[in-house]
Length: 261
Image (cartoon, rainbow, N blue to C red):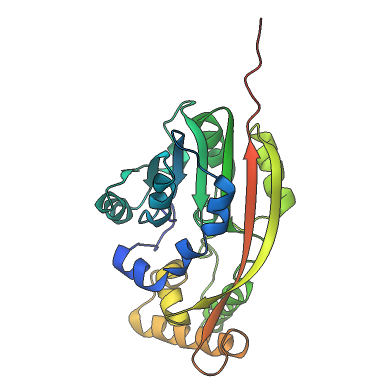
């Protein structure tokens, strides 16, 4: 669920992630159902994070490999008894060996989706499927707007700080087709998501690049400004926060091999 090797300022702590982002694997069940892993299949979990969903795929009888760019997340997945490796999503080394590639809440961290999809296609056997969910067009729009406004109010440019790729369905379907996939389904799903430990914890877990390089006093000021702006729309006034998530959910497959006989 993480892959930020090319994201300045973003670091992952598996304990912090488990505390503040436990909703991520919980809400991944629907896309896991779409994967419908079968016993004996070999499946790649791209951006596996701490392995919470990888574990569920394994429990369905599949042989699953989790890969992530964050060493601490890979160690957390290994601690679950899973097969996991630290691998850059832009340099997937696999060659036609997986029945399916699965990814949840990771692809929006990968700002060069064409390279990622080329690696995914290369990793799959002919007829293999790709099942993923990640941030789509409009995801955390209010949060991004508040962060950028808070930075600009202090005279700080947000250029280069926005760490995410949130495509439209049309844009991503085109990229999939360019990589050789046939798109079975693709949709944007608005999903306001309760944040059990609050907005500040979410920002400290996921939005570190917006604060990268700022001194501590300035970080606190920008954080306070952001929370004040967001309190009007994403808090109920009783201390309960939500994030304005919009997820892009996709199922695609490669064509079967063409017989030359």
